Structure formats: C-alpha cells, structure tokens
Amino acid sequence: MSTAPVIAFGQQPCGFFPRRFLYAKIVTARRLREEIGGRIVFFYHDSDHDPRETQTGLRNRKTGELHWLNFAFENKIQRKYTPLHLKRIPEDWKQQTARQLPAYVSAPAVNAFRSNTATTVGAFCLGQMHSMGLLKDIEIIHSSDPAVREAACDIDDCYVDVSFEGETVRARARNGSLVLHEGGASFLALPSASWTKRQVSPTRDTRLRWMQSVLHCTHYVSGAGEQAYLNKADAPEIIFVNRDFIENSDEAYVDYPH
Image (cartoon, rainbow, N blue to C red; front, side, top):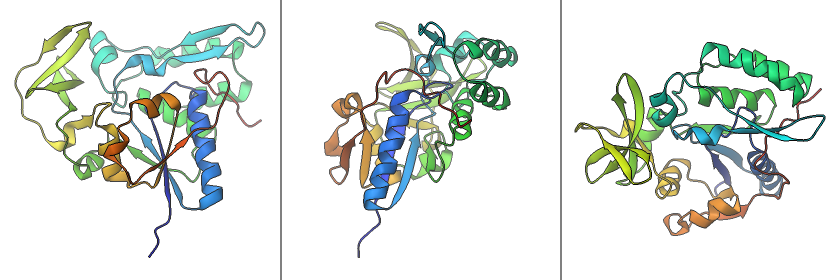
C-alpha cells in the first residue's frame, strides 16, 4: 500500500523577517506538493542558540543600501547560549526597531511587526511568517518540543538544555561532560549533571538522523550549503530536492499582501 509523500524542509529562526532562502524553500515545497501530492512539514529548529542566525538584512527603500538589524537580548548569557525559543525580547526592542522599519519595508509589514505580541525570539520569527501567510497548510514541528525530543532517536553527539546562572543554556555534550563554547578553542566546563531526552537537541552532524526519526519524510528541500554537510547516508530513503534559486538569498523576504 502506497504512502502519501511527506515533503519537509528545515530551518532555524533566521530573522524577524525570514530570509529569502527560507521563502524559496517554502515555494519549492509547495510546487513539489502540486506535482506529487502529500503534505508539507516545516522542521523549525528553534532550539538552536546562535544569535547570528537572526540577523535581518533590509534594504533602504530610497538608497538601496543594505542594513543588518537583529534582536536585542536581556543579558550576555542569553545572547550567547540560551536557545532561540527561550531568548526573551526586551520590552523596548520592538518599539525602537519599529521606528526604523518604515525606511526599509512597507506599511503592512510595519503594522504586522507592531502587532506581533511574541515575547521570545523563536516565537516572534514564527509569528512574522504567519502574518505573511507563508505557513498556511504547513505542519510545523519544533525541535524544542519535549514530545518531539522524547519521540526522536538517541544521539550521542548533541546539545543539552541545562540551567546556568539563572538562565537555560544549550551546552554541548562532550565525553560525558557539558561545555559552553566561549570562542576559538576556549570552552567553559559546566558542573556535572544528568539529563533526559527532553533536554536534548541535535548538532549539525546528527540533525538529519534525529529529525528524520520524527518526520519520516519522503522528500527534503534544502539549499546547496545544507546539502553539502548533510550525511545523506543517515537517511537513504529520502529524496533530496534543491530549493529554487532566489536572488539575494541571505536578505530578508518582506513582501506583504496589501
């Protein structure tokens, strides 16, 4: 008996307006569904912690000059180590950023930004995508979801969410110990602790196997950079599909319906 296709794509939060390469993944997945049927699943890797991922590239509407904006963070530990789904947004950040946005985006985009009530980085990025209508009829699976983590396969190469100086941090598990990367070859060792699967999220090298153990997708849409590091041997049953080309792929996608 044949099984309906499951078309998946994955991405960590990548800007308070999503980057254009993510928009291209969505378009590609929708086109593929039109061709072969099935359903689309978005693996939202909001347990990532890197604050650089949410830098948002916007072009000045008059000069065309590219500017990069990002979230503010409550403290240094949150900025560097807290998972994106738990990074809290300072109260004044949205107001200050909204005042700058008319120079870069349309009035509907500004209004949607102002209307976003999310208080964490991961939720805010997802809220903007919903306001753009990009995720209609797409199932979203969060890497931060404890139920997803419980259902996923066991992995040794992983990150573990633990408490550190009053914050939740995403520590790397190395040889049974937990460490925070301080930069370069420097690591901060954390006190010994036990953990469960509900605290575990994958590294880049284990992400495909971990994700596929939950998604069971038949097709996976990705960019060239992503395909270069994915270990396809971890999921030989998947048909990998290159996302459609899009210009200025690292910049933000800001087209809102008027």
